Amino acid sequence: MTSKITVYDTTLRDGTQAEDVHFSTEDKIRVTQKLDDLGIDFIEGGWPSSNPTDELYFQEIKHYSLKNAVVTAFGSTHNPKATPENDQHFNLLLRAAASAVTLFGKTWTIHVQEALRTTLERNLELIHDSLAYLRPHVRHLFFDAEHFFDGFKDDPDYALSCLHQAKAAGADALVLCDTNGGSMTSEVRDIFTRVAQEFPDTHLGIHAHNDSELAVANSLEAVRAGATHVQGTINGVGERCGNANLCSILPSLELKMGYTALPQNHLERLTPAAHYISEVANIRPFARQPFVGRAAFAHKGGVHVSAIRRNPKTYEHIPPESVGNKQRVLLSDLAGQSNILFKAKQYGIPLEKDDPFVLELLNKIKTLESKGFEFSVAEASFELLLNRTLGRARRYYSLLGFRVMDAKNQENGEPFSEATVMIQVGGEVEHTAATGRGPVNALDNALRKGLEKFYPKLHEMSLLDFKVRVLSPNLNDAPGTASRVRVLIESGDHKCRWMTMGVSFNIIEASWQALVDSVNYKLFKDDQEKLARLQAQENA
Picture 1 (cartoon, one colour):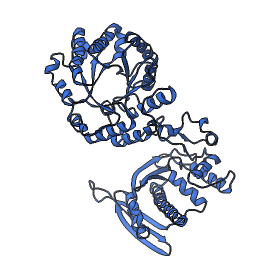
Picture 2 (tube, one colour; picture 1 turned 90 degrees about the vertical axis):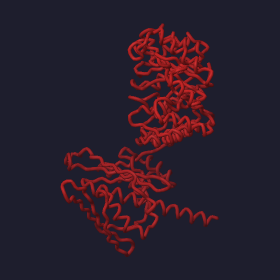
Picture 3 (cartoon, helix red, strand yellow; picture 1 turned 30 degrees about the vertical axis):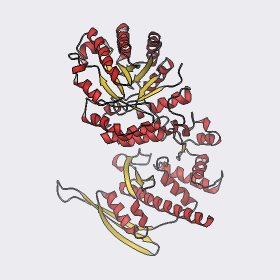
């Protein structure tokens, strides 16, 4: 049994069939470079004959030198009414000049007769002749046996005969596809074992879809049954419910099953690659995604945190760093002293159990979270609360008052907002007014207007995201529009991003709380950096 698994990524082709995923040609180039850096063996760049973006991609990618990956072009068997030589689809495949090509062909009788509308015998010719025609022109040639598992269950002899034709034509690997994503893991194991017996000296692959939430399990079981070639997408993106998620498959193969999938020490690049590709695709990363999600190694309960402080193995199935992730400890009303001690240590603050500051902070957290605060998602607000409790965060300004006005001049006119803010910095009072696209933007503009002459580095900061959630009412709270709301504001500068929050029955007040924390966090971090520079100069 080989210990090396060939990894074939199809994010740029199958992944783009997801309804919320689109890549421009430039995006595809960037993703290709990131996948190559991760150590992927084959990157399916697209279907050259299907759209101009993919055609241009294959022209452009030739100008880039890749260290690990082979860019692969994708296509189908030739038109039943044509020959490979006069099929325009094949001409475009060859024009892509990729050194690897993957062709898919029908292996389920219902698809041959009803989708392709040809005879079973003609379909066997299409598979053989298409692959045989391409064989002299490419270095790597793969056959994707579309709907193979459904086809095998319906007519095993015919499905196997399709594979025999592909093998005879020179395919380097026969990839069994669970295209509808409906096969159970036991079915995949049994069918793959049967195919491996039929083709003992052939590289076999698996291409699974996730319609039954089994794509990763089916892919891993196929490897156990003899697959040496695994296809999937980063973050599991793909049509309908998605494809097999390489972010789960790769660490499972390497850390749990003893296979080699990536170059040595490259697995730790997985989490940054997953997040990068999400950003390029303009989709928010799934926080609870196994292995690479932000919450994959996050701990909230005090008992859990107490245990991982002694030994992370107690509640972590792998070291987070092995996949490029990190351990996180969250703060909530479930928190114990262990959570606070852990977080304080992360911030470089040495505290001991039963320290009065720890007990005071713990009581504050529990009180605030009973009102709807959620420090596990707004760590900047917690860091400020911690440092205020310890007397390490100074007051940068005092609010004397603010007022927000919303107005609309005519029935179909655009509403506008205006805010006035009165603050005191030291002994000086600033009274400013500003308009904005909505009340929060107006408040933000007015506050900055009053503060930037005292703290000019605030111009580096910008508001990146704003979320409002209506909270479930407590026993004494009113429901519906009279409920408390939680506002989360994500801000950032050229160095980092941070999340702050506010809670109130009044959405403007909750927004103000989150906005003030956001500004204060920026000022606090700038102070900390300045102090660190001064200490470094003194030590030098």
